[in-house]
Length: 518
Image (spheres, rainbow, N blue to C red):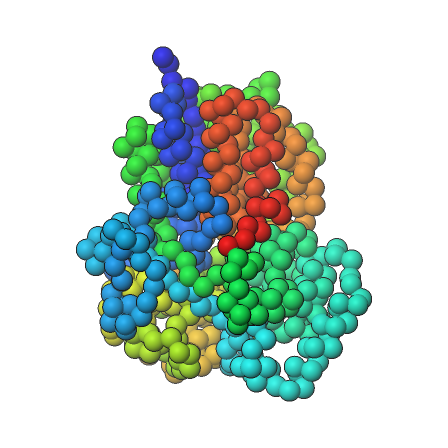
């Protein structure tokens, strides 16, 4: 029997999940994945610089969807022994009976304790904001009183949620919003929260509010079972030994073993359609244009690029897609011998560094959005764990702006100067080495023409053999598991000849999907 041909655009989590699932669940498909870069994983890739590994954006592997958890376990089994830093420090983490030993194999998921905090006015605050004594102490008595009255006002005088600003104020009060949300959000998106759709908050915050935080605190105090847990409040997560890219590299190898083809450095430039069907895609590799025909097309490329590369698109749809906004991302990995921040937590670490995975920077004196401490994600990301700290300084920008166009050396110098301003290091001579990375269209944004995204979705859904999956494929700020589930749904539709695509677009929108109780 002749196999049906499937072309998948993009080798990020969504694209590779779709390829793996098609080949794993059926022998009726010939799968080809086209990837613009020379590395798989999309934004979930790992960059190896001289033995020190960088996680692009920070990726916790946590899901309420058991299909996803089982899939991860099949690709990279959970640890059966403690990783080396836990052993040295006599720390505990969850073990799986019969699971692999991280010191003896790379193909393993570690279990890591979660800690992310906010750095505000040279003090640490919990993320999400908690109401414990340390938080109130750091805020000060008068500010605490102001926060309380501000929140009470938001309870009795609810704002109509026309923007992300309204969304935050309704849940935290105006004072906390101005302290911990307003400046960071504007730094992240390049727009004031009053200009951003509240839908972003609904997807990313997932019900978090002062009330939710209080409920969670009481749940911990009284050790209540089956308490509601928001994604933002998880305390332990899975993490590939060598960073998130390792998972997708293993998946890519499996796709090839199952007969699939992955073509890297293949930039898709043209999508040819006729009679509500995609007929072919054209990509450029080694300066040559190559056209490939197929029966099905799965796209995880940005909707903007998909529509712009397609023929005979109505002007209205083309205009909406062209004006869909994105936020780009730059990071500089910085290798240093020490960090000036004191570890005042009860968590033990190698070298007694602060134990955070990443820290949100809420300092108006700098443009830095976050910094990661890779030592705390996995001890195997750092070449010399005992003597160096490997950090990632994260910045949000727009492709082509002044920051994006900086040379690597200038951008690194800029980031290092901000480290000095924040008191993280004393001077530039403290830096042993650095490495710069850029990520295009890292974050689909919820303003400008986004309010008309439904028109674009309706147009795409009329194309019978086209399935849009993943973060950029749907222009939705999905987590890894959401992106994977969109591909589960798309593959299910293809295999079972299901024409309605609502199930694919509904991932990360239904209340039930988010609020599974544990």
